[in-house]
Image (cartoon, rainbow, N blue to C red):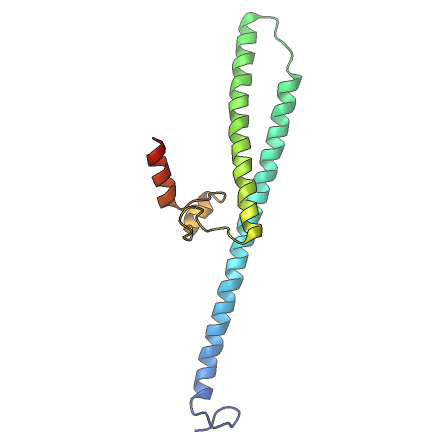
Length: 146
């Protein structure tokens, strides 16, 4: 049997389509990974932008709040400001986590657990795209901190 190009390789004609399919599949997997990475990056950038706007709005609201003349209104206003500051703290922490995830994307380490360096399950990344840890390491750290 003579191969496609007449070089005398008996199985070349049969193997080429198979190798071609494998190469195309490898290429599509890499492209698919790049597409997923772009999707995660887009999600993170959108969330980052939303948080920055919300933080800015909360700061402007807190600065512009007028003192209430009534003591009951003052207490309600102080309580509202307190919960606003707590929410703002959580939003700042989340913003730092998102910034860190975007840094990992740029560095090429996104999707790897910072603790054990294993791949983070894609379902976990879909749910919490800024997570730096796989579920096992996250649960282990929560157990230690309790």
